[in-house]
Length: 260
Image (cartoon, rainbow, N blue to C red; front, side, top):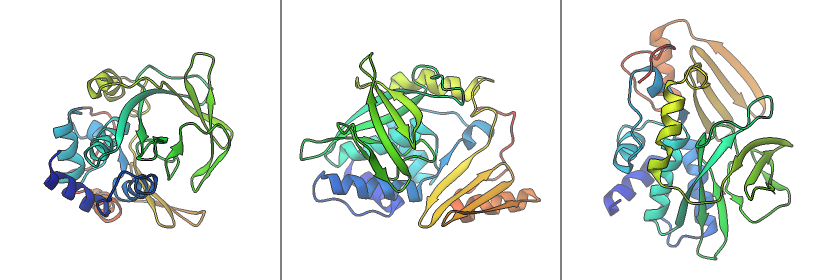
């Protein structure tokens, strides 16, 4: 990523270029990303391919001002952090379902980021409603965050179980992976009838006072803990909501049943 691309990415998330890869800089960039780049799976439902290359990710997130799901968001964010001097490793995780069972390998991508003080952090801007700030990788106590109370637990297999408010979220391998390794997980979630991404539409963004989410034609705005749900009546209203709340411009309404 060259200097001009870095500047464009930072403008995209409304962040200043940090003077050094510090822990505070990582926190600022992490929160800025969550507030500007939506978690969304719209590509799956408007016939777009998911291309896990740095060039394609930057084109989508920065140039096209879109969001994405974990592979895209954390893949792009990891590239930005690496270009800014952070030591970044891509790590794979298996997400727990409602029954407490872990999903497929490469179910999820997160980032292990080392700052200039030698500390490692779990950064994740691609898991929807998750921590607002990076989690201390080596801390096994409670970590309070605006998004909840988190804990990292060592597993007998040498992995890490990430728990939010007492509920397991995903189990994380610590071994570094390459971006291409996640293509199988992205293909599964893009095509499998068993994937929740093929069975749902979502576009969600953290806001200064809560969160805004558009699921199909249901718009949910949460402000200071209060939820307001609006059912949108037309394609025009849906497309306007995507642009107004998420900065996403589409020429047609995403619908379930079409995959890229």
